[in-house]
Amino acid sequence: MNRFRRLRPLLPFAAAALVAGFVAGCATPPSNPEDRAEYDATNDPLEPLNRHIFNFNRGVDFWLLRPVTVTYRELVPDAVQKMVTNFLSNLRQPLAAANALLQNNPERAGQAFGRFVTNTFVGVGGLFDAMPDVPAVNEDFGQTFAVWGSGEGPYLMLPFIGPSNPRDAAGLAVEYFVDPVDLVLSNHFDAAYLSNVRLGAEAVDDRSNNIDTLDEIERTSLDFYAVVRSLYRQRRSDEIRNGERPTTPPSGGRIFSETQKQ
Amino acid sequence: MRPLRSAGNVLVAAIVALLIGAWLLAPPAARADAFTDGARTYVRAMLDDGIRTLTPRELTDAERRQRLHDFIGRNVDLSGVAKAVLGRYWDPATPVQRQEFTDLFEQYLILSYVNSLQTYTGETFNFLNTADSGHGLAVVQLQILEQGEAPTRLDIDVRQAAGGRYQVVDMAVDGVSIITAKRSEFGAVLRQSGGIDRLNEILRKKNATLGGTN
Image 1 (cartoon, each protein chain N blue to C red):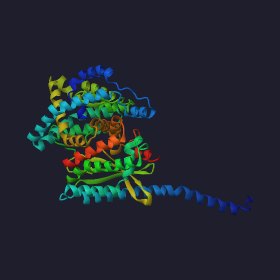
Image 2 (image 1 turned 60 degrees about the horizontal axis):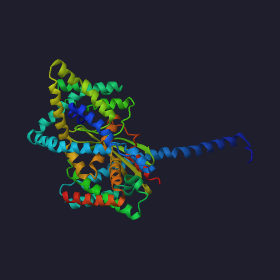
Image 3 (image 1 turned 90 degrees about the vertical axis):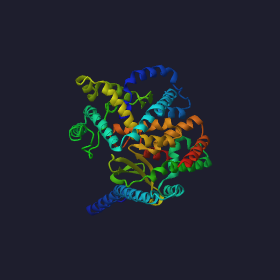
Image 4 (image 1 turned 60 degrees about the vertical axis):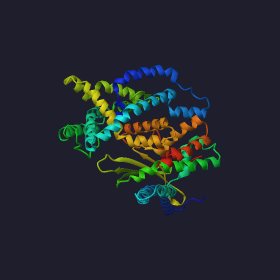
């Protein structure tokens, strides 16, 4: 997903901050068994630190990303914004194809690769979506690791990047080195700086596409941090399952029926 | 028990046994089909009802909220959902606290979602799969189609209440369930604030803010 790619060069800093914060940021597990069960289910032992980083990220968003995004939306015509979204989405397809292959899903790999080729040549470099009936494939290394059996681990809030966990953070780190588009840019065109341009563009494009939803979620939330945590986990779990119905973690319906028994 | 006298009796007994077996086994399967078919028919009607009554542009805010309240009354197992959202905090709560929470939670849902109904622009629904998901629930899966946009997936969990009436118990948009999200959020508030009375107070304040801004 685009939002994980935001400001990737800051990843080493993020890792250092996490290690430093680990000692200071751990919550003390409660001793009461019911509280303990809930603490384990929440799976956020770094919550105090994570909340600080979350507030920091909101500051970055408020002072930098959101204003830039709002200006972008005011200045750039909708049709051009749509082209930017198409173009960036198209550039994600080679990585998606590679990950679909790693997940032993050749059908999805073919879909991603077919989209990439068609949209690059027929869709004028990816500015237009020439295959609107075939959805873009969303696969990344975090999802691949999950398919390979890696658990997500505790919830992590990464500086600048946002919600994550050790598995998805490791996926980001791998992606930093092997994204096919970035490799081509740096190896064949000596234009590695374009990767950072792409990154900035993705941050703004992604923020722009989610601006109404995010504003709405923030407006209606009692605890914005907790909502984002739940939404991130549910979205990632859905992406890993490629939209199949969940069994673990249970669907909302399962939670409903289990609570009605008493 | 008297011994069976002839092969004829054995045959009759076997047929009766088979019939009883078929009667015991068949109804659940037949019921499951009727259950999921009914669920799909119900969801179709519910969505039509929602679009007809909730989305007209000329409604005032107050009218739309009132209609959404009525719609929830017709279609949602509200107390069940409130119970699921509170989780382990439901049992220790008094009936008064529970009722207060349920009412505030409904207000909160209305104020959270009423704005999105205003902006309905002719999206259509494409029904995919309907399945018996066990535990007395069926899930109706569909896509929301909007011109020029990628389809949004919507899973609607329904149950059959006493009298055969269907009720919605949860909805998940692109895999994000309302019950799961709200349970997690309210759980965080309950842990920090330490009780349902405090949660009710926070909800009341939130509702006042939300009600004033739309």
